[in-house]
Image (tube, rainbow, N blue to C red; front, side, top):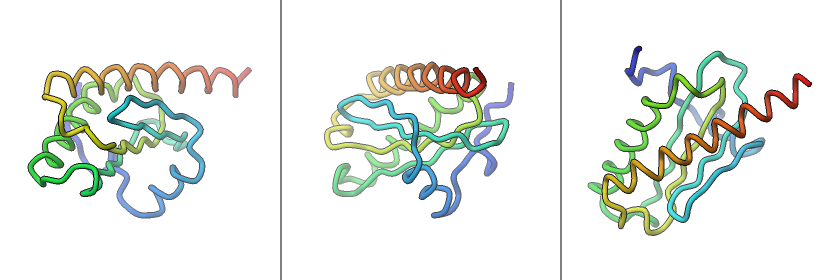
Length: 125
């Protein structure tokens, strides 16, 4: 199992992000995080992060959040189909401690995986 996070697993340019924002068919969220996703036609998922300074004031907290979300993505990527996912941070996310943040991410990945699988089955059937 390869748990690296190389460039092929990232949304790298504005066009990639815009495509997800414009056509996101899948949405899962908690009070602190919003996951938007869209099929990407590849055989692996890709991740993009949006952590606004307005919602998470301190750079230390923004970096911690990004690190934890990337880590949770790495652990889930083998279960995810070919989708592009953007994770948006909402106000209050910086108040969560690390275990709580990991737990929230894990739940959201599971929901997203279920919805993506369901959507793929509907397209095929």
